[in-house]
Length: 139
Image: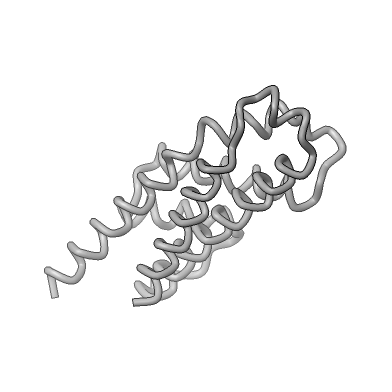
């Protein structure tokens, strides 16, 4: 199933990020490493968004009003919790900050996301896998 391969791709990016992520001082001093970490979390978040969109589409949950609406729909359909929906919206917003390179982006804030949100990708993967297994068993 394409969703499972996308989940594996996402966790692969997170694993790579954990391997390349230095301590904060080194992160702030090394531009190339900083950019590599930023790009890696960006593609991990994009994979998370893709999986969410695939589920909404496959389950025919309806069309979201916005990209963030995907997470609201998943919460409404009890695929994920409302709190976790908010966490995923934060990640999506962070991805937008990285993509658009807003001038007020502080490297400290980026490092905070890199060190405090990585476990959420694993929570997302296990939550989605559990949901899909339940759906498969109910058929």
